[in-house]
Image (cartoon, rainbow, N blue to C red; front, side, top):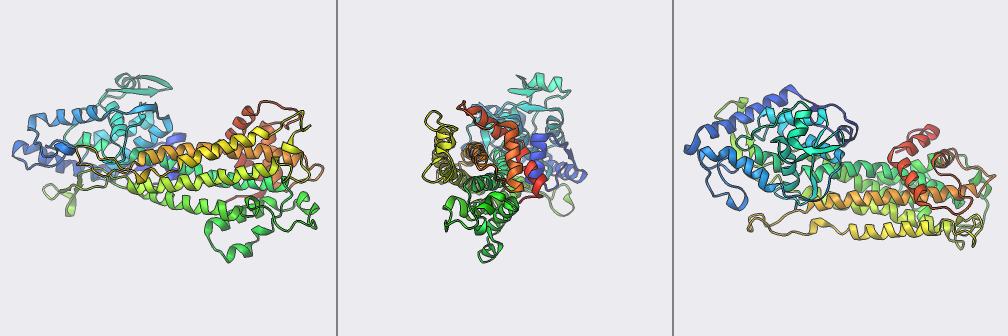
Length: 515
């Protein structure tokens, strides 16, 4: 993948999680060099140069404090050191790699005034597997994700800690082991490295990729539950979707039709007296589909953000990009509000997948609702409790999500002596979304193992090809429940089946590509 050219959230995930190589395209290198010349021209003027924020002034509330020419490099180093005050658990390697990629992309777009040497070092961290230690907490989302990004920048100057081959060590040692050398920051470079939304965008982008896959998993889990509960596929008729043409609704309904075709179970109750299924079954297109549409909008926002310039001040070159024609504009592109709002909505949308999933689990385990299934799907109800507490665990996750879905973006605490008087809290939006996604995955895992047990109890009737493929994939990692056992291992196994993509792959092999 080439830095400096637009890329997608899927591209970001490939680099962050699967080590896809990156390189700096030639035009990006030229843009970065040209914008750097504009900064060098200001720095070369020394104390005779006008005050330019971040180059020869202090930061935040100290923006009016003029910095002497001989202190400019120390100013950038001190900025990084003083802002590296993150707390909490460390980010995982994938999240750190996503941050490095996004920070490099900003520089490669050519409006930051950062030397190509810095850009090359960021790319080299990705290539050689050096992951700066970045604590997860400490950003308020404007002036960007200052504290997390400062920890990233700290490693570039050989300070702080970094992981290499899974081992945490001083950054200077990690760089040396990787055959790299730290840099000394020049004018504006410290500020350019820490100003921006790359923390919230990195976490949010990876979470959105997971959420998109979970929409398909929810359709699969719902189809397995529908078969176990002897429900109808009639509510997913394409004609119903056409008269309410939300794209997400149509996508989910299309998946369900593909998943449920040719079912012996469904044919066996074609003439039963039941008129309608519960909402958690027949309204899957409307609920799952609304989640799909909300997540698609959030993904559009973050796709714009990953290809945006978010530091400050921003360098604009005149015609031809030559020296002496640059203009530096101080603004607020570092403010995370667009991302924060999108990620808050994404958390609400994703949580609905667990909300409705838990209701389907209740349908499966409640003997008043699950005609023909044993109470709690237990082999011998009373002696065995079966999946009674699996439903309770899902209910717990759903309730936790309700707390996590309180929007962080409605909050703001002034900082920097009132200069930064409105902030986005987008970093918190991102962290909450990531936890919601983990909870949703676990809830869907619980539904899958519960619904698979229900399908077992419908034997000798056979489910549809799509549901049979999902059932077989589940049974490869979770055996049928023939007596009570600790279910936490089953839930973990089903969660990994989801996380790895193996469940979707198994089903698509049977029915073709799903939405």
